[in-house]
Length: 149
Image 1 (tube, rainbow, N blue to C red):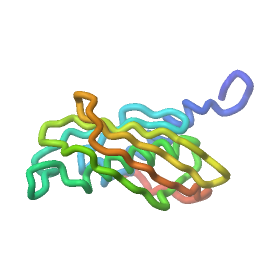
Image 2 (image 1 turned 90 degrees about the vertical axis):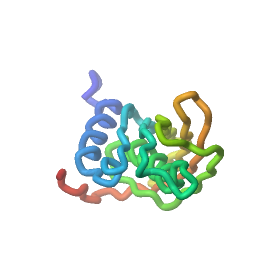
Image 3 (image 1 turned 45 degrees about the vertical axis):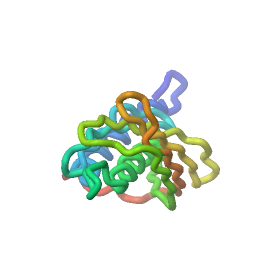
């Protein structure tokens, strides 16, 4: 609680992220780590490993999507109400290679009622933009989070 008795938005975001981390097996298995979270925003990182490579020897687009989607998930749930993706689009702008440390920064663009709109930029370690992602979410109050594993 803040000094005014209202919930502290940063604390809510951090507590929600902690609970999500414990239950997010998909992101954990892919090597995705959430490193920053705040109200309506989140940053996730992933190092491209050999198992992330496609037949061309670059990071598979599905892993780029997963990284961006994970960042959006933490940003959209940061308000303390469960939210799920309702759709997303991604533009792959440059290949990511094995060893690249990718950083996905999600920013809330709009939260109208229970509907959210999020932009996520995925960058390589040198700051080069690898992908741009735009996602849509819907808050689902009362959705039970899975128990931690």
